[in-house]
Image 1 (cartoon, helix red, strand yellow):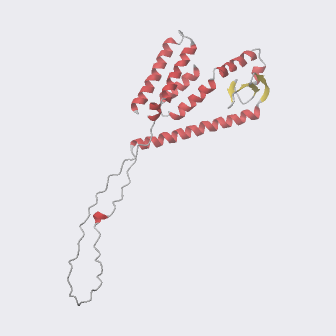
Image 2: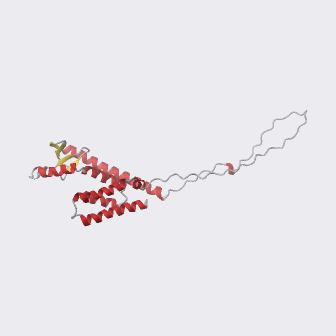
Length: 230
């Protein structure tokens, strides 16, 4: 697991280095595509499996049982005329060795503790982000006003957003009131439609999923912030 964490961190540092050297020398699209390499690495089976998981249950050690030899009582020959009396079976004391040994409770290993912390952190962060998105969506729907369509894309104006953006499960363009009062409304609308055409909302979803799964790695947070700026 440590090797995979170091590999991902080194890959992110390499992207930072290439980004700093060639940012103004190559097309912006190529620089932005470097983050796709990091995303693919995070989705590879080896990296995903390297996340803290519960170890396989160790096989319980077989309990050795000592079988005592069966002691047979000596047979006493009775005279033929004597009436045979039923004999009561002799109850032999149970040896402590014959009792089933109860397995002792084992303390949590470091991997199990780390797995619990990782799962709890991912669950809390995921719930917090989902709650924030839900609150924002409710506010957006209450304050939006429909302006029209551009192809299949709906265009709204809303006071719940501070700047034009894409929002919604089915992405729609949201503008602000002050944008409608400027001469650059058409350019701003085209800017948001370009985000939609480049599928940037899917990139945003991937960044969110990466943060939730790898919240404990600070390099992932740096990659998310810088890729969003790019």
